[in-house]
Length: 575
Ligand code: ZN
Image (tube, rainbow, N blue to C red):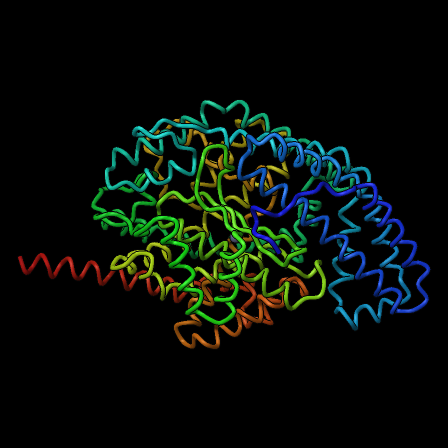
């Protein structure tokens, strides 16, 4: 493989791809032995890898510079042409499902390949082609709108990611102004943000109905590959609301005391300590070399993985104008190469990228080596997020490399933010359930619904009179809500696994790491709950599951706070 910058992009011949799919379907029907069938499976896998590699390469280069016309056109090409592959994909799927060699396929690849094929056949339909193209177009528009953000702030031109740094300033007035700048940007684009989401909801509702459902939700679940029902998720959310929210409210109260404000406002939420947050102690090169040392020391596997990422330039980390906001990990399957994208802004979030997105990338590399099929390269997203969120915890002992003497502060903040994120995660999920169950809601009614959910899951949140946020607009910068419906509960569910690993690594780190490695290597060869079992993790839907999973984390946070308060009191007495 060449370095990322030298990789040659070539638009795939889509007609050849389609006729290949049609021929593979015919060859499956004509196969007289399992060997013949398997040869088709492997050829099909190779074709998919090639196609996905070019599609992802174009998409990565488009997100790195959204003003590059060439890759924008390529992104439009994939967004428009891929949905039209549907009839060919379905013909292949149906031929595979009708194969007389199903038992042999199951013996060689396990039952998951046919299960995945069945699910794909259920979620795809020629009746959805036009709507899918339109959906992709609307999502592109939303992402372009967010990427277009340019704010003049304290003498710098920054985008939404760049503003985050100022939201952690020790100067409260700066934090407040940075939060206001975000609201101002969203408020100035309110009409377009409302219209885009409204169009997406109406469109997705129609897609659900075209598939014979009452609304979009069942199709949304199929698209996410869910192996559980909305009722299971609702029970999980209820546990969070009843048991975890009160803990978070108490931590919120202590947070205000810690930074010395009478009441915590929205712009104080990411400011963790009276003398400032822990921030990384160097530039990009410093961060990458610290991460390289960390992964080499962590294990042989992680060392090889990160060296590979560095050698082939598989990370684009710095924030810059015209770059899409946020961070993600994707892959170039033809090379077994993950790719990490992010917007470094000088805060501790940059380290989170080097652990979170690197967790995804590491798992992708493990599964790529262990699994024979692209279909098994990665599992459903609530399992993928266990890879990433657990790596954030597994790397805790190396945080001195990034934060020096402030490493304890980082570990504390990271744990706190990971925990208090969970109510927000389920809030986003319930919001989407309400939206898609009630597609006729007006944009203003959707915002009211969001605001009501904030009262339930984030009762301590205080927008300090920010009109846009108090009207319920916060969710409009949450890209998943526009781009990937129902993708968000995944983070809350995965938090359970990650916190469980956090507890296990206190008791027996080596055993926890073995469980984690097994999970990563299994990739998507098993469904979600089977993966949990394989990694010795509990089922988050079980009664009491939430508090059991987060217990070690909560105990650490409360004990650390008690200790800090005690020290303060001792200091007072000494004075
Ligand atoms: Zn992730």
